[in-house]
Amino acid sequence: MIAAGDALFLDLDGTIAPIEATPDLVAPSARRNRLLHELNSRLGGALGILSGRTIEDVDRILDRPRVAVGAVHGLLRRGADGVLVEYEPAPAIAEAREWLEPLVRAQPGVLLEDKRHGLAVHYRGASRVAEAVTEACQRISARTGLSVQAGHMVVELRTPGPSKGDALGAFMSELPFAGRRPIMVGDDLTDEAAFVTATELGGFGVLVGQERPTGAQFGLESVNAVLRWLDLGLEALT
Image (cartoon, rainbow, N blue to C red; front, side, top):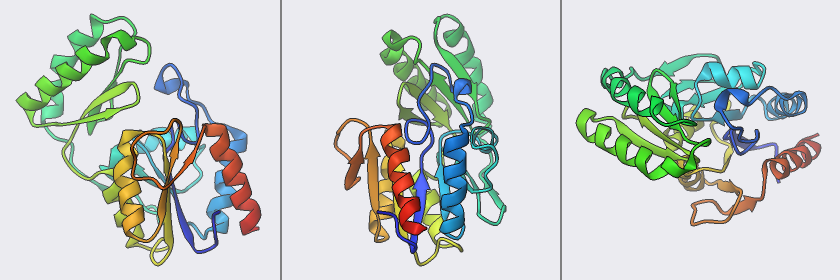
């Protein structure tokens, strides 16, 4: 259960918002955003979103709840005080885009998302090409030096730099997170580093979805289960 002395970190897609056919279809939810706003208030601002999305996209989906955000898997951080910490995008992103654009155009159902610090190739609409997309990104990574980040129905080429675990650790060194017990809730492989960091700092991880080898200590079966758990946490805090 969530306690008053905790710091709560949440992934977005597949954790507190359902995964849709394309990323832009994930929309604001009045229930979810009201819940996050109230939790953030009860925790004294010690609630953070750790997502592969950009800060602008997180704000759109959460209807600007003014929470701390670790975006693009940790390459950008906006603290609870609103201060932005950002890694410079790798120049090789432009070269990688030139390689990826014709490959994506040739595959119906595949979407290329430009996050400035990285390029995400979504194949939710064409799962048959998963292996080909992964191999193409690995070849481009070897050519450009960009990092490959695999996720749920997506492969990203990103600027080398911090992970979600690094972002969580950085938040935990700052107010209002410092001195609290970190809880990380996420569904994807990209959340594993944050599960490990939360555990190392005296907290724990919660894996959402099907069981798999993980650094998380607990599990919840679905987005709806996460929202119910957060509702119970808010009741306990109240």
